Image (spheres, rainbow, N blue to C red):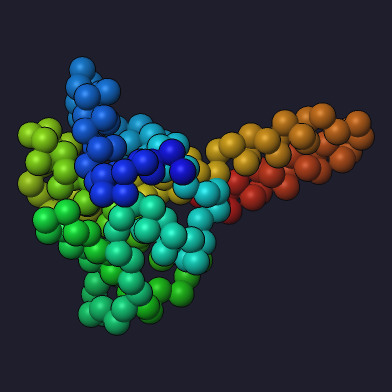
Length: 181
């Protein structure tokens, strides 16, 4: 995994944030679309994330991930102290994609903590704005993680010999992409 270091004690989140801030200093704050795409690429997130992937992703990010009984009005929470990170996601989330979105939402809040530590906050100290940015990041990361797969499928569809087969494949890809939005 690209985001992994040869040194097991390296703080991969902090390292990623430092590199991201340096790389985008001229256009700070960078858009969540850019952050999401670079995060997905850097940490090689799999396409079409599934709840079962979250434990492994958490381990790769050195974030302890748990599903637990949270208050009804709380979908997820995060904790960051002395380099120890934890994300909890409500065990009540049953809709497709909600666990994954909530996990990435919490990751974005942890990234913001690091940006602030570097003196480069990307979001004002406003809870509503942070929540909005975290939601945007989560959606962007989920969509970016599938880009290569959709591109590959589309390319294969256009290479089909049968015009009818090609049109059917493109229609199915289009419907699939819309459903994933």
